Length: 315
Ligand code: FES
Image (cartoon, rainbow, N blue to C red; front, side, top):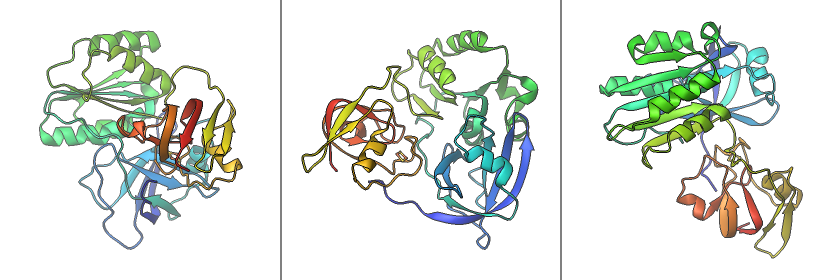
């Protein structure tokens, strides 16, 4: 199981609303001047007052150690976290926030870096672009949005990134697909690609980036990775020999809990790694972003991942 993370009661130091129904939240410690540091691409877990946890990328400068800044888009179809940030949060509130964790590091190398963002997916890329700029690296950010005037984070991007390195695209999905194909057709030597956005955008980038070498691409999705196949029922064999059936419309985590298996969980979105357990046998369908491809050979994330037939878990 993943190590527990430090959780701090942080104070909401500032709130401001920007284009695209995005609220910027600044957290600071009520007594300590510095917070645990973070690398570009890192996120924090914000614990909601009604239960549950949401991950938000840190958009601030990693060199600034006194505050964490997140950006939250209001999601009409969301699970309540964004509505709470937009309607329930006030300056001075104390909120449990974890120490940062990073599943989305800049790939190693010194080659040119291409950062591709879909809408609010610009959040982790802003910190990455700042770091690349500070290193004197060659980088470009392409931000794909529906509406230029409502482009999420456009003020933050304009304030901290050189305009000549940032391109905004607002010509629609088909034009975006063509632009991505052109941008990604020829991977430069030692090039690095980082992308983040909603599922359709991620799929379009993945398709266009097929020629990029393994290890040169890093991404972060907002939702469990989708293999395109409709979920099918499967079964989990426990160490005591019991078999737990996972229906097509339930997660393995839910089915295990109903069977009385005690499992910690936080994000329930395949990102934080809290629910991680051992995979002993069987064919898993990994849909998480918490495990490396190597770790997926022997570990399993039951909040989002599934299996074929029967899989055996170390539970
Ligand atoms: S609870 Fe976060 S990865 Fe499963």
